[in-house]
Image (cartoon, rainbow, N blue to C red; front, side, top):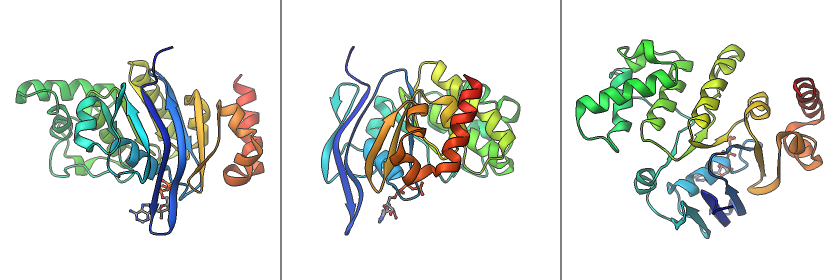
Length: 252
Ligand SMILES: Nc1ncnc2c1ncn2[C@@H]1O[C@H](COP(=O)(O)OP(=O)(O)OP(=O)(O)O)[C@@H](O)[C@H]1O
């Protein structure tokens, strides 16, 4: 097997006295769809920021596509193919869906017409094809989440870091969004997602890492981590873990 697409080793970052991420190492295989889970404040978003260059680590290294990119600026990482979404979605409200997506396309495409054309393709991929001319401010919460995905996809990522794209959605919207995420991975983009919606993690992820208090406490398949005692204690609770295992068994 070749080198993983992303490999972090011994990554640590503190904020004052708070150790937000402590000595975390993990590797993401090219073509995989995996998840990072853990309780609130576990350090998941901080880890994403360290991977993508929005924060510099106190210690440790980040390798992406065979290069040491530790501390490299986010725009350079995006140009190399690593793109992240944000928990708080902030589209350019007055602009249309098409124009919002075209901003991401401009990382690789120069001409305006070509950028708008590519924006249409990406919009279709995330199910926003019929809403291209709507102002971003007129989208529902679910629509904004799709727009955030589209803007990230427009940069032609090789690795997409998704920060809670399902947060704030109702069960039906979650069910509609899951195939979109699966489709993105199916199109060849490697996906690592932070997600609290465990039903989605169980259904989508082939590999799961669990963070608690800045440390990696477990990893494995969704079935493995949901039956891991440390994960049950630190995050899921016994009732949820049992329900998830039962649902997974029913789907198997
Ligand atoms: N810029 C910052 N300055 C100070 N403390 C921070 C900063 N960013 C994060 N923290 C703290 O670091 C810890 C980890 O936060 P982080 O947002 O990475 O957790 P998380 O796992 O993403 O949580 P959630 O699931 O709630 O989004 C928290 O205690 C948080 O308050």
